[in-house]
Amino acid sequence: MHVRRYLLLKYFRPFDLSTFDLLESMEKIIERLLFLSRWLLVPMYLGLAGALLFLVAKFAHEFVHVARGIIDFSERQVMLSVLSLIDITLVANLLLMVILSGYENFVSKIDVAEGSERPAWLSKMDFSGLKLKLIGSIVAVAAIDLLGAFMNVAQFTSEQLAWKVGIQLTFVVSGVLYALMDKIAAQAKEIDKRCAAPYLERNRSSASHTELSASDSTIQ
Image (cartoon, rainbow, N blue to C red; front, side, top):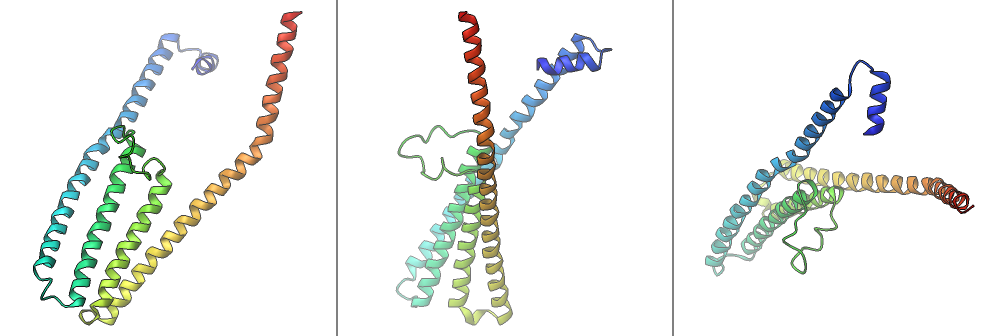
């Protein structure tokens, strides 16, 4: 802040200190407003939490439907119904990951779930990990849908099955590419740290030597 004021005074002499103080105050207000804007995401996460209720209602409806007809259903019908329940559960897991991880990464730390109730993945997942989890969940949901289509292949044409397989492969390739990009980025950061380590060590040594020289001068 002081360096900025010195540069402004040096190169923009027509302005006085009161103008600089006003600009700094405005800057603080703007930065504060931008920082508080993250709370605009909260209604969205609350809406997603409400969407979980829809999935729970759909799961309950499907479960009751299976329970009522379990005696009359064939083995294939039971398996398709179970796959539908798994599909709903995977979508709910995906939604929950987006809500919790997104809130903690972009809004505020969740302090109410400390201890044994806090999910193990929540504190370890950053934005990069969230993207990979999302892609993995989408691939799993698409795979369940594709499996259900192949178990009920008589209701689909060859073109429809080909489209389903193509979409599934697209999701898989996208997930692999995301993982590769994250791995390359992590390796690049590691290389930067290794390259910067000698310079940091040299700076620490120089600073230590300067402090020792200053202390010796003071003692003398």
